[in-house]
Image (cartoon, rainbow, N blue to C red):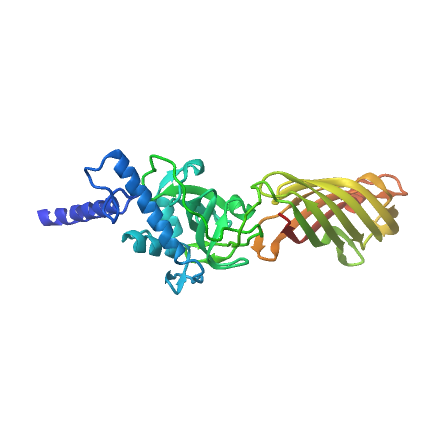
Length: 378
């Protein structure tokens, strides 16, 4: 094999490695404001602090620029385009172009060690991928380009907002860690305590809000909610597959972590002719919860099981409803969170006939599918 045929692929590999080293984080040299090779440790630390401050100052010039899918100009920016343009303006540095590429490029750091000028990354959908990147300002605040929510475009937000706390994936730095702690003047608008919502754009799914005086704690996730669900059953009476409907009013503390909610439900069983009014406590998360509570019931009807006619009535029971509720995904919007869900429940009924396992189980078991809307109060 000719020597030139061997050298060509080797040269290509070398060039790739050189390019990777030039554009790897942390950025220690090769850009404006980078410290001299002969700089003292104190001079180097100050140079990196100056570079971080220059980047943050450049980012603020784009506050209010509208969001634009794939945008990287002052007329429109997406999340990674905003950071790319900011670094280009401040330091003449070219960054990777997507949120996921930036996540691979940075030097990872714990959130408690993140400093102004570092990056924060988020997973805002169900794919598990990095979908959004922001510029950290310190004190849990950041500036970014949001594609949906109460406000869009380049705005300020906070990790104290529940949406971002739930979606947070990690932090990374483009510069070496500053040897001494420092702060950035954060006098522009910061964030309000409105709930935020998701939206999609190139390089990420983003959402956000802007305003001032964020007072929300990271644990503040009091919610109100309503839900509506048709109920289905394997028990078919006169051709009716739809068993009835259930509704729900709730207030609680559900979030990504465990919480509790008080729920006032109303249920109408069309097959058994019973109206039920349960008051339940739910325990779990916004994705999976169990519930139980007493029930006040009215009405009753005769039901043919194929072998006999049985009389069922709702009755009133201190443990009249037990069930489980599962939510596969959540749509976050400015108006609140919308979530489809499935619910399986056992509900107490009383029969005037001898115990019949198959008939009584079918009468007591309810399966519902519906949609729930929730709104965070703080």
